[in-house]
Image (tube, rainbow, N blue to C red; front, top):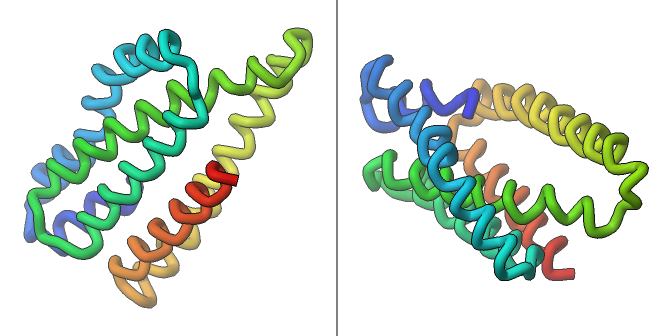
Length: 154
């Protein structure tokens, strides 16, 4: 998301304000969708299935951004939905496998790993964009998402 603003300005010729609006779509959609997806995941269970679906949908959205000129609001809206579904299905799984007395530590470690990954990917993504362009950044995203999907299936 950190590189999205300039991506939208570059690829779609958007203004600064327009690119900011598109970038914020993920968070607006997520704010509405997360509680709804949480209810669905709680009622159905099958967290791994929902994680897999979220990953597939995320792949589709990034493929749209990488290889098409479809309206970016569509791809970012899809990303907002997939991120919401992923959070609602992935984070609760920790409570299924970790003893209750260790949940605080486990969530802390999980958050640390996520933040480290976000920081490292932001730095590497910036390097890719500066040296190879935005298409290579999206290809990296698609490769990482594919690895996540294979890991979920295994």
